[in-house]
Length: 274
Image (tube, rainbow, N blue to C red):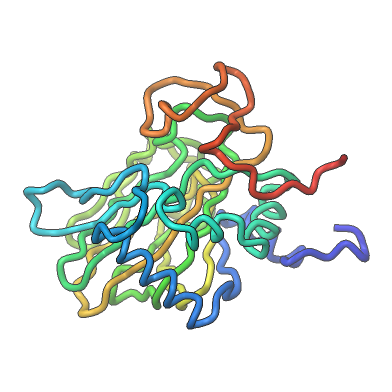
């Protein structure tokens, strides 16, 4: 940044994100605003919204005794969540972290872990699960709609892991007892530290992570749910480069190699040259 061109984040925070692949940001909603979003989330999950999201399912399958409710593109179902993807504080910070003045939304995602039966999200990277977009420069903004704690299944991440490249299609082994990541060490730079760190996030606060940062979250065995909204933001230069299929591919209207844009990939931040 140049003097007089200060943004939402400091140079130190941006440097930390580039090194670690994760950054705990500020509160972006007060208690009342967060409560309204959480209530709307339950409306969508329980079928009371006027419209429907792109997807709504138990990620662990109907036969599991654990539940992780996944909602994709809740912004299509609810006006408060549509406003959320345009939140100027969040968008400005993501733009600073990516280093591009234009942002579009790839998609949003809820992974709600209900009390006591909330299941795990095993260790993974995001971008390898998005095989129709390049390059891997996306940043996710994860906002807690109630306190996300170690007890109710907050995310864990491995600092610096975004610098190690894609790992076997994004899937990383998970120790069923300790929930530690079990990577293929032959794919990693020699001597790297794969120790995970818990990432608790307060109600209304935002957490950022790079699309190649290793992350996962253990089961929620507490009496409190873990509601949160993640928005996956892509820089303006992201292109449609199909390799395998993806849930969002039927919504793509551009040709392979072109900038990914359109009704379902809204431009939410544009501070580029005119």
